[in-house]
Amino acid sequence: MDALAAALRSARLVTVTGTGGVGKSRLAARLVADQESAHGWVELAPVRDAQFVEYAVAEALGLTDHTTRSPREALLERPAGLPPLLVLDGFEHLAGATAELVAELLRRLPGLRVLAVGRRPLGLAGERLFPLAPLGPDEAVELFTRRAHEQGVTVADGPEVRELCRRLDGIPLALELAAGRLRALSPAQLLERLGDRFRLLTGGGRDALPRHQALRTAIGWSHELCTPAERLLWARLSVFAGTFDLEAVEYVCSGDGLAAADVLDVLSELLAQSVIAREDGPAGPRYRMLDTVGAYGALWLEAAGDTARLRRRHRDWYLGLAAWCELEWFSPRQREVAARVAVELPNLRTALEFCLTEPAQAHLGQCLAGSLWFCWVGCGRLAEGRRWLERSVALESGYERSRLKALWVLGYVAVLQG
Image (cartoon, rainbow, N blue to C red; front, side, top):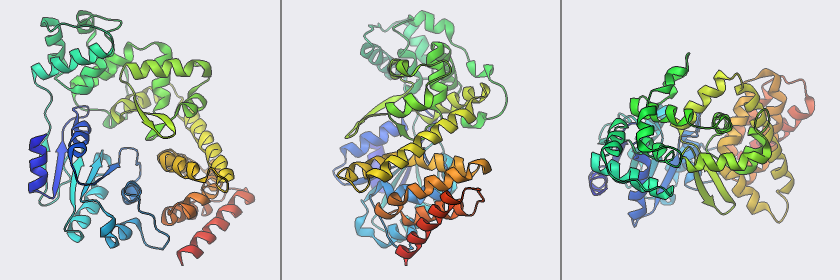
């Protein structure tokens, strides 16, 4: 960590690179936690569209705008509102748009430093690369035994444990997934079961999966050791973007082999096995699935032919959430509504995109974009709202009421922008 801190002192752009699961985000989080200066942390993994990179940055920095300016212009015109360090985590699927934005920010804002975290460089002049290697043998064993202890299992440092850590190439995520199985299997049994289970899946989509053999092995083998209910929930959770709460999971993922009453128990098992992570916030616990783990679940969901149905359930939940928030906006719960919408934006965007790319659902996209008027108008997201609204009203839905509401909100947004 000292070496990374030194790199940031000597370069304005440092990119931590390494394979998925090697601990890049964790290292960056530890670094900024030890920094005395302010920083902005931007989660780019949930962002699916390159045009929303600048929106995600502005959102993470708490910048709102009620003019026709783009988020990029707002960032550049308000340097006093920016922290001295900007962390961009999980940018690799949006590398081009991220590099373009970073280049302009660094050129126009001389006091800014950027720490990028991803599997590849941004490719910009002056970029200092900080490749993160997997753990060494002793470090890997220490992490594995510590995670085992957290599971209530005592594991001694011995030949089988060292061979297991070696076979998993010292990748922290792979080691944690393996340690999550020690309540049921011994290290010797885990060694016997090692194998690349990704071969069970055929067809496309492999570009979304981690390229490192040991990590692919650990994820596939962890999936194989799940119960049928755990595998089912793992696959269904892949439709979420960013974080999600228990209520959403119970609605979206239950049914057809998984009772709503069982969702909490199955979710808790996936948490214990490090398949998902828990984040505690003011509104209660939320859960997150790493993109490498989620990509595997998405493949299984597609193989089961269930992706479209789950995406419709996801859409329906967030349509309902938007409707509830709209009703509660003018109430004593307005602050709660604003906070809820902010944390749910990745999922709301995913639902909007799904609606607006399926002609038969155009009216639902218009309904959702219109219901979120308070988000666009009251929470300083006029430019983003205008994008969604213009896309929605351009579609012929056959439902005049939903289209008229979207048109009305679009007009209101345009008036406010001036």
